[in-house]
Length: 318
Image (cartoon, rainbow, N blue to C red; front, side, top):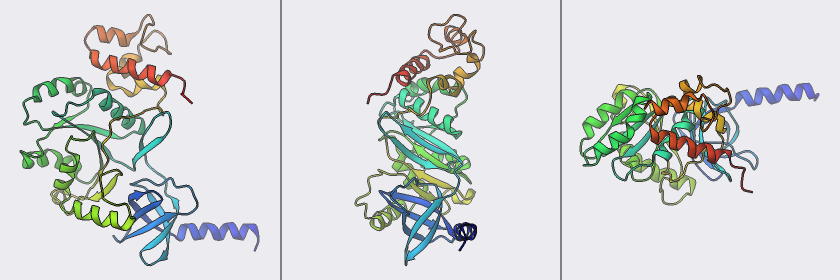
């Protein structure tokens, strides 16, 4: 067979492969949901795997309930964090991101800002969810989030344990019909929210952990759920991606000079600086520092910017 005919046959074989959605992964093992709703365990072809939850993949069967992933469909986006040593992908093809924080434990503005920057770099719409608003420290939490509201990031107040109905009423219209990823440190209520939105979440977790031989589930990997059977289903279809909690969030994939354009409160003033390559630290004619002095940028946000700029400007430690 000529090279041309072989290439044409290869193209036909690829286009004829079934497609599916990665709903969970553990090591080199993935659970793929087919277009007719069935789930099967798949492994990637070759040694390297770039699959993440939310990916659309091309696969073919190898035995009943099992298959091999032959390739990825093009992604709309990929949300991940990266430090000096490695990258950690959360999910692909995300419509919107909910960053969940809580009145208690007190949240880190640095971690929050890093998550917002990663979402902005990936082009993903984002909202902040403030949980446990029934606790006494809510006024202080609102005060700390005021700069984010002022710069246009919506903040949704929730009390997932004491006022379930109101919380779901707040979230429902925003979640309906969209694929939403939830991020947040441990203890903010992600698991509580997942169990409210997906009534059989624990059952699904057990089945998937058994299928992938991943042992007891402790939310160490992102998992995809359909919202059709839960309280949001009446408002329209949608999907929910639960993610593991994090205590660090590297953004080494973002260049330091990209920080200001990705920060809504910095972006417009930065266009008015005297120098196009202004770092907004000591240059004369800096409109960002002028906005800071005028109270248009919060001091806490400027401190975070300096922290991140210095961190991203340091040479890698090999």
